[in-house]
Image (cartoon, rainbow, N blue to C red; front, side, top):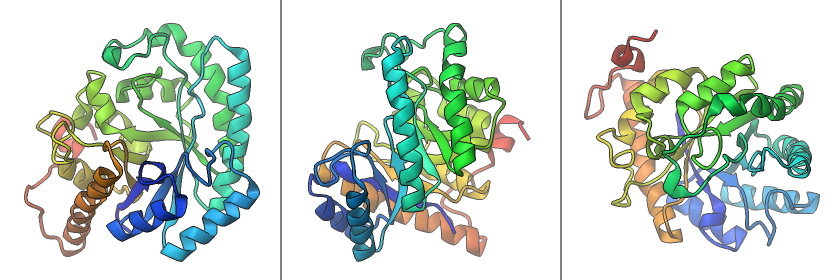
Length: 295
C-alpha cells in the first residue's frame, strides 16, 4: 500500500457529513479529526458521536486516519493545563482504538513566545528539555501500553518546530517506538530549517504522518518558497518505506482544501505506479542517504 491522501475534515465544512462527502468526492481516503464533529471538537465528542462518525465514514468509504488532538498545546509552566492535557490524551487513546488508527497527532508544549512572526526565533531547547521530557515521558509510555503512537507535530509555536528539535527531544526520551513525528514539512521551513533533505535525514526513521500545506501561490508544487518539490519529498518517503497518510491542511478555504486533495492525489498515484512498474517519475530522485551521506 502506498501513501494515501488525507484531509482535515473541519476545514471543508462545518457540517461533518457534508465535509466527509465532499472530501471523498475529491479523492481523500482518510480523515484527520480535529473539530466540527456535530458541533464538538475531538476532546468533546461523545461515544454516541463516535458511532455517528463511524457510520458516516462507512457511508462514504473513508477511514479515520489520524486523531488530530490538541494535546501538548499547553503552557509548560501551568500545572493545571498540563494535567488537563494528560486527561485529554487518555481520551485520545480510547478514540484511536475506537476508530482503528494508531496515530494521535500531538505537540511538545507552547514555546514562551509563540507569535507566527517569530517562528524562526527558536527557543533555547536545552533549557526547557527537562520539562518537555517530564511532560512527554508519561504520555509516550501510555501510548506504548495502549498500542498507539504519539505523533509529535513540528509546529513553530511549540518547543518543537524543526526536525532538529524533534530529533533532540526523541533522543532525550530514548527514541521509543511509540514516539514519532507528524512531519509538517512547511513548518520546518518557516522555522528556518531546510526540511529536505537535511531535516528529513534526522527523523526519517520516525515519520508516522505527514502534513501537506500550500506554498504562497496556493500549490503543493514546492515546499514553501524553496526549490524542493513535494513530489520529490513524497517519492523519497515512498521509496524508503513510508506507507502512511499525507494530510491536506490549512489551504485557506474549503474549495482550496478540496483543490489540494485533487492536486495531491495524482502525485501519489504516479509515485505508486512508478514504484510498482520500476518506471521513474519526471525526476530521478536520489535517496536521502545519497543526498546527505547518511546511511
